[in-house]
Image 1: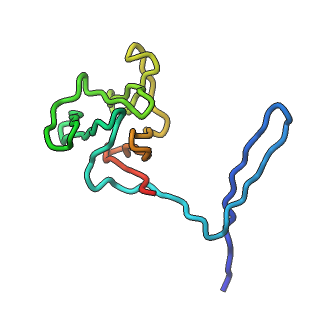
Image 2: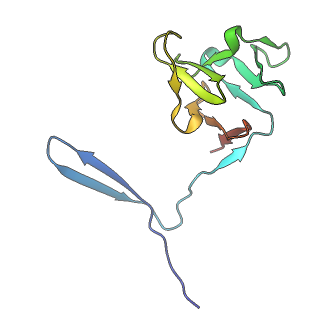
Length: 129
């Protein structure tokens, strides 16, 4: 029987000194994985809750009970960056919706500090820490 151990590490580059710092994690360190959201709800800026219905419409709620369509089918991430699903892609805007680009890995951080993303079928995934 062959036993092996995987060492997880973080590498940081400090450009002014041309040094690299390697931080090793313990062999039993926990690595969080994406899982399908059980509720389909994510939290945006100001604690506003969002969800996508089967037709692809983004709805929002302040209390999680009364839902209404989100204006222009958009939501705000934790920093107030506008996000939307358009052209079968998750997109974001750094200039209040004037220009749009595809969101890297289709992921964003919610107002609750959790990371969210859509998979290629637009199922909501979340990292539960």
